[in-house]
Length: 307
Image (cartoon, rainbow, N blue to C red):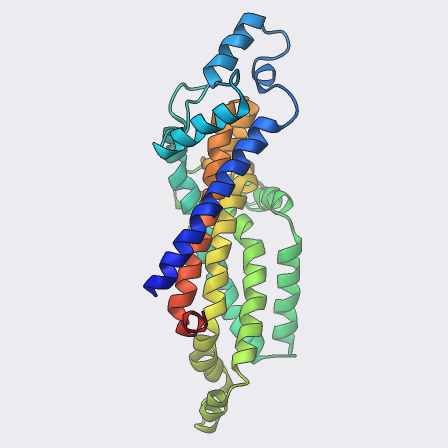
């Protein structure tokens, strides 16, 4: 296990370097002058040059890249142009809201999808199975930018059951969590169903049936336990996707997370803050995938024995 972790860490280092480099290049080499975008075309030439010097954009690209890497090594992501606060501090203050929303969506998806997936497998070919598969198809097809406003209209405006937006109390997280977790629940439901059906073909399931257990108990107590490995793995991978994909949902519900911060930074043309937010989201996805790779091997020792 230790050897596997070390090997994965060695592979993680070039991955991080690649992500950092990609973020730098995307931000710095896109067409157009970022200084002119921030200040506008009517700004004085002296103002543009002052801002260009402040951001270090008057240096060669390789020099900027070296300064960028040196700053990252010391935890310095630069300074926000709008607030004059360190970018790292701006992101850290928004980080708890994003993590809270991502875990709420993850928990909601698991609580809905896993039981329905087991029931669908136990009633394979029946009305329950067809209904859950149809719902999962809808959940996977409906985009967040359509589902979010629909939920607001129905549950916040028409019924007045839940807050429209913001982060104020437990009720305010329900609609964003449902919007963010709907697509994941659809994927997880289908995966749980197929994993349980595959596990149900093993010999120990036939032995459980022979002992007189009901079909539902066979699936819940025996098949599900052995089908959880791919489900847990996908849950972890989807957590990374939730952290990265919360931008739209946070914007719709004015949720004060990192995704919303990035949109605000784009609107204000806050170049260093945009770069910091993009890097934060990308690295979160990388580290979550790394953690799930280690967890997968811990759950199934046969994987590390094959390596």
